[in-house]
Length: 291
Image: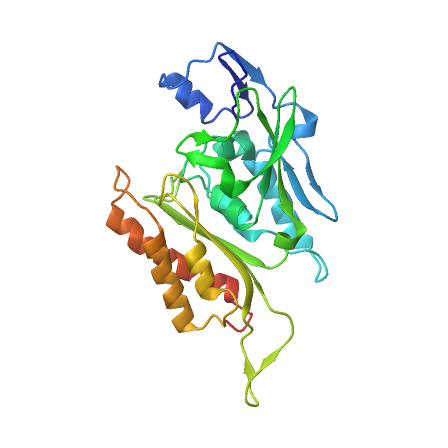
């Protein structure tokens, strides 16, 4: 992960998987690198009554191990594991990259195609930023300004990522698509989190699927920043997620994104495949819930 110190050409370094490439290509030229990978406070994953806090220097592999262990051992009473984050983190790079790269680095690199960014947005995550003089919390969906650009001020460090307990509950999923299976960079990715109303809905003597109480949808690599799709959310919030509502939401997804054509794929491809990925993700989150 990286942040500039006031008045200095300095970068913080944890995994360095993105920063090393930027230095070798002459994109950045830091006079000083400060290695924070061994700072214990930045390497913790802690859950309490308020939610889940992930230190920014936790590697992607460590995060995956913790999430998979929690999923295997969870009880019916425990908070749901944020499956979209598990799936997004598992899509990053190769095993070597995942063992070196950090969750904070993936966030601070601010690539629109980053595979943890859309999951963190739908999970209502916030980022703890700290400098020598102050600290602040920034919602994930307000953190990104453009490709490789964030709201971080000179001298600020991403300290941790917090997911509130309200969004550990519910169901979530993530999908991405790229040109190859190994070390793939997303051409498009989509994440969804939703919570259904509690209890059983009844119509005229027949059980009906429960309405969506709340939903958050985000997509990556379809705009200059990972994009929350509020119009698509509105199509489903408070309604029963039947075929007509899902088709309307998919159309809203296509209208809301701002894809471009680049070396990886075309604007038209991104527009079509984003809607298809959205439908795949919705099928997963609705599975087993009468969806």
